[in-house]
Each structure stands twice: as structure tokens, then as C-alpha cells.
Amino acid sequence: MNILLTGGAGFIGRWVALRLLNDGHHVWILDDLSNGQESNLDEFRSHPGLQAFIQGDIKDEALLEKLFHETKFDICYHLGASINVQDSIDDPRTTFNNDTVGTFYVMEQCRKHWVKVVFMSTCMVYDRCTDETGITELHPTKPASPYAGSKIAAENMVLSYYFAYGLPVVVIRPFNTYGPFQKTGGEGGVVAIFINNKLAGKDLHIYGEGTQTRDLLFVDDCARFVVEAGYSNKVDGQIVNAGLGRDISVNDLALLVVGEASRIKHVEHIHPQSEIQKLLCNYSKAKELLGWEPQVTLEEGIARTEAWIKGRLVH
Image 1: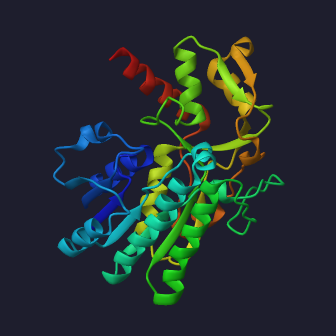
Image 2: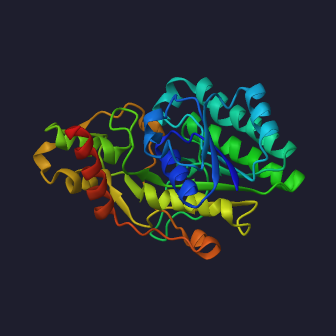
Image 3: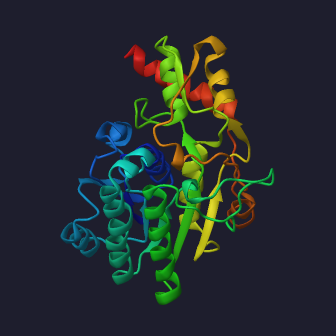
């Protein structure tokens, strides 16, 4: 198939690109490199399936029009977005324009050219989990940050194209994804930052009490889920979760990574109002409709991520 992947130079996007290429598709990657890095694509630069890398913005309507006009795409995997919760609180305009308005521009091209859409949303749209059965797709949403608000708005826009026009779309909500190629600095995920600090001999800093829990999904499992959602018509017009189905407190995660309680420090939370106290995924819908379930345990995923970060430090 001919596939357009927005945000393909990003952390998850890179893994999605790899999987699509390995599955034999022709892939066009569009990324403005505000989050992503072109070096993430180095490994498959010469892959015969990679048709083009376009450095450009999803808010550039003329660019989108040209792209869709020149190539008949079968699927658009739309991962391009502003993804930082803290940034969205400090600067809501940028996040709204990228995540909501940008998504509208992508949807318009997909409608005009009849291209299936896989829209990458986030578990951050959910209200806290209240029991051990986990968060299903019917769980209440709560836009605790402009990031979550922008994603919910975009989700509704995407789904409206299914109900109004019959366009095949699916909204996916992966839980906290981690693994190789995730940034290890301030914008990175908690696992990458913790491992990086451990290897650098630094303390691990936890915002607030550290009792908040996360359901951590290894990136290879996440990419497989993203790709499968595009291949199947069983999830058209649906919202689908993906996660490990196991949550861990940030305190326990820090201990799992570093192994020494003395190296864990608690610091004041910058934006405590956007914290979700308990995140635990119920992925039974993904399992039922897509036959998807996670294959990598948290312990194995952390080991693989640490090996990758170590390898980068050596170089």
C-alpha cells in the first residue's frame, strides 16, 4: 500500500515506519522535526520502501494538497502532534494549533482523496482509573491539560468524518509508551529519563509523592498495535486502547530502574493539576477486534531500553 505517516521521525513514528517498511509498503514520512529527529530514520534511509522524507508542517495546507494530489494514499497514519503536557499548559495555543487544527487539515485531504485515517490519541484524555479492571474505551474522559483537551477535540473531529461521510477512521489511545529512541531529556518519557540518570550516576527525581501509577507499553508492542489498527476494518469508527494491562507507581518504577532507594529524590510538581493519579489499561477491545496483546514485559522492556541508551553513551 501507499502510506502517509505524519510524525514519522518521532519516537513512536520511527517504530511505526520500520514496521510498515518491513511489511512491504511504500511509505512517505511527513515531519516538521519539532519533536522528531531525522537521525531516527538513519537505519532505513536506503530501504526501497521509503519513498520520501518531507520536512514540513501538517498546518501547511498547500503542502498537504500537493502530497495528496501527487500520490494516491491508501492509509494515513496521523501521529504528528505536540505531545508535551507541561508545554501545553505553558503554551496552549501551539498545542491546539498542531493537535486540533493540524488534524483538521489532514482530515480534509483524507476526505477529498478517500484515505483511511489512523489517528493517534493518548491515554491522557482519561479520568483517573478507579478499580483494577482498568480503563476501557467507555471510561470518562477529563481534559486535565490543554494537550488532553486538544486531543479530545481532534478525536471528535476524526470520528465525525466516519459518521458524516463514512470515511474509514480509527482513534487509538496507547498508554504510556517507552523504549529505544525515546528522548532522555526533559521532553522524554519517565522510563528513558530514569535510565539515563541512573547510567549518568545522577539521582532520580520524582514529581510529587510518586504514588501516581502508569501503565507502561513497550514501543515495539505499541507500533504493532498502531499498524494493525490501519490494516483492519473491524475498528472503523471506533476508539481503541492499548497498554500493558499492568500499572506501577512511579516510586516502584524508580526503584525497579535504579535498585537503590537512596538515589531517588522527590521534588515539587510543576503542574500537579494535570497529573492523573492512576492509569491502568484494559485492552480487551484491541484483543477482541485486532487480536492484539502486548508481548514485552515491563522488566524486559526496561532492560532493552537500558541496553539501547548504554549503546548510545558508548558512541
